[in-house]
Image (cartoon, rainbow, N blue to C red; front, side, top):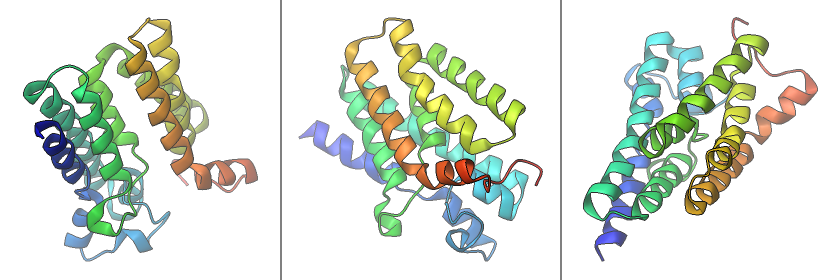
Length: 192
């Protein structure tokens, strides 16, 4: 019963649509602007850099908090369940009729709490790709793919490797429109 409650609480925390709420406070429905996504990148492009950074920090914190909930109140691999619930909440939030973000920022928070070394390396992948090609989406996709690769390289437990594969799969699925735009040459670069 306690585990189920922790999972539900984590889903509800993950469902808090910080990007939507911050944009709404400024009189903007972020779902009708730019890419229509509620995440930090779309908020940054349409509301401003500070707003985007605030959304990024808050979405990252959702992931950290939910992993800590599982770890502190149940232990073991329950943190993977609360982490997945947070990601599900962010991606399919009950408060926005199950239309949410692409899970990258919340994944950053989840993996910061689960494995800082792997997270740092994946963040480095993101940084290098974005610096070279100026596509945030491409950096995000490749960083997400790198998570299970680094988990394998550093011989992490199979449960965490499997978790990282599932998370990367969800992120790629959520980025399918970006992938289509990247392939067609219509994806927006930083600075455009």
